[in-house]
Amino acid sequence: MTRIHLDRRSFGDTERLAVEHEGLTASLFRYSTGVEAVRLANARGALVVLPYLGQMIWSAAFDGVDLTMRSIFKAPRPVRTIAETYGCFAFHSGLLRNGVPGPSDTHPAHGEMPCAPMDSAGIEVGTGARGPWMRLFGAYEYAMGFGAHYMARPSVTLHAADARFDMAMEVTNLSAGDAMDLMYMAHVNYAFVEGGEILQQAPFDAAHTVVRRAVPAHVTPNPAYRARIEELAADPSASRVIRQADGFDPEQVFYLNGLATDAQGATTVLLRRPEGDAFLARYQPDAFPKTVRWILAGHDQSVCAFALPATCEPEGYAAEAAKGNVIRLPAGATARYSVELGHLDAAECAALAPSLGG
Image 1 (tube, rainbow, N blue to C red):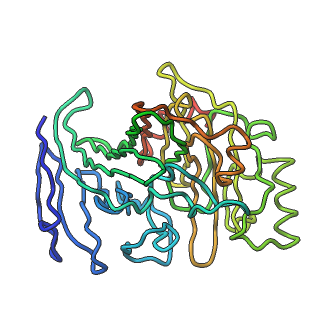
Image 2: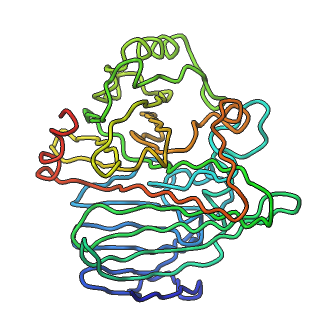
């Protein structure tokens, strides 16, 4: 394995190749907004990752298909809260606080990690069971007087022959003796696909696909919206195939329960496009006891976040603490999370879909 540490001075307005490894490349550039970016690419496509802005994955495109949500943001912005640059494919939501703040919360939406100013970043390469791979890694030390002290180490790993990749987070409580709150979600914002079909390892019934009835502060409800919530609560199977005309503006949110797993302890969720290919999310429910679904088909932004693996639901700190969904990570302990994402071509999807009831 070879590891290379990045220097912010290496990023310029013109994209340049920095690392090459057996069919994988990493290129460095800087957006006109001043945000540094790394393009990780293989023969099937590429990811653009922001190494110093929370290590969010700004965009993902494979096999000629754009996987990323539609938004008003054409380029990432150097900001501190995710709402100010909400157009990325995926971000790390948390870590001390998570979700949309409730009436008694003071934290920003989705916590401090999404736009965290990373301390360092680098690229490592190697070869394993799935062949050659390339990984962007980074570190962020959070320290607050009379508060929490932790080290976050996110990473993104791409293999040479796959349109699938791994998004991971490792967080260590650096306190000498105090436990810390931990709330984490892999917030993956896939594109809204008109006529797309969601395949999941749980029934589309009211017990396993639960509609969120609470309306967050950023949503302005109307009678039709509230009626749609009640319709979906009674029969969530109406959300298996998504269409813009089916009431996803404002957003609809679901909580998935009882997802089945395979021999490796992982569950798989797909969004199958009408063309026969699919978007993928695969992860371990033991690490992610909650799965959230967020669908929005608005005028300025649209997204089908069909599987958001999480340790908690997204209702803000006070609400999640009351539910018992806030982890207390002991001093010196480390928590690790990983989710496999990406694109399956039509043949790959056809091979996998029958095991998911498709």
